[in-house]
Length: 239
Image (cartoon, rainbow, N blue to C red; front, side):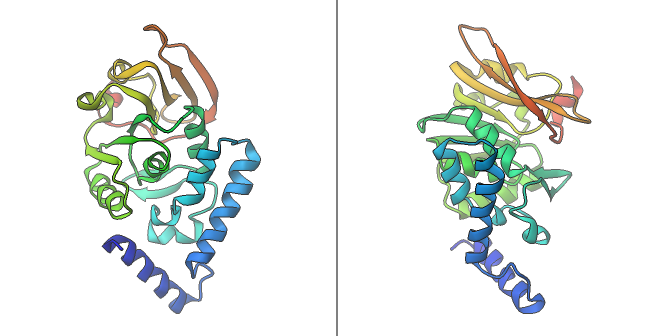
């Protein structure tokens, strides 16, 4: 057991002893996770078994702040520090299903955040490359993913606007922060036939979840509905 996982487990024990909280056991978290997947994800139309299995497997409570443990399996975003959030579980499932993963893909994620989306992807695909611009979050999530055994997930501190050219091209690129345009470097790092998904539009209010597929050098788009994400920082804010 990693130091981080051990520390979280110890904290939960103390919560139970000191406050008689309902969040008192791994069994309770498992029950809440199963209820979340059934009520908030499967019942809302997510059908991909690989996605549902990943959502059932990844312990979301290990990716949230300790002050948010009692809300870890609620279907809404939660703060993780530095002005960032862990995404709503349904939106995580929706984005993951939308890119039509088969299992052998190499995926680039822009905006690691808590690492929860990277872990979901890591349960399904061959390799995940994830970039976080905020150094404090990067250091936390790097150790978290390593401690949880995600050896197929490689994390990097940097500006995701420029992608990760060293490992390009990618079958899928997933942007988990909003932008008012699609960064050109990401399009150039997408494989032929590859998919890119991004919350596109206003970075202040709501965006349109947009799916792009590369077809013979062109990028037809499909709009999947309204979402609300925190904005990309770095180069994206200067455009």
